[in-house]
Length: 233
Image (tube, rainbow, N blue to C red; front, side, top):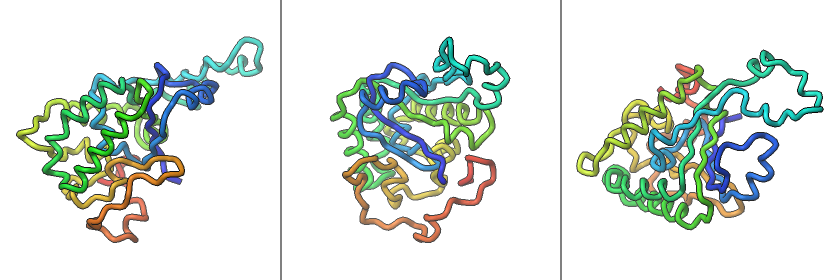
């Protein structure tokens, strides 16, 4: 089964504990999902200041006094989890970044993929919730502790420092995080490779007319791994 990453807009102010997820979904919007990667269009919502670290003992708040779980010692929690990076920002800040980075990406994406980028921006604008959260636990476990944080920081710092005049360049960290080859023609990518997919009755993104540069049989199989979650290298 693929290691999945999830994005949604939410009124939660932080990462929910396990016992809070029912309440979390009541105050959250459309959930988007991606396999093996954080899609490029998702990354464009964030800055390096939006990287947060979920501590290894995050769910210990679920262990209340009087429950049997109180008897678990620190070593047992350490064996089951580790700290890892996730992404969290205000929706208004995310939308502003999408718009600011649109010019940098336009030429690289081509007309159809750029239209998809604009549609992604519009979908964020129509959400009514205040924040954006990307849950990354299943991606983090594919690499060494801290590896995901380092790659995210490098990728987002590049997006922050890039300018429209220079255009977009696929650096190694973005290639690793977004699951895209460094020499890939973004104007030929399938939509889900750039923006994931929406969970719900209405299929999104739509199929794009330009076919990808790899065969359908190749795209149905995960690439050969070289370094755990950096498998596309």
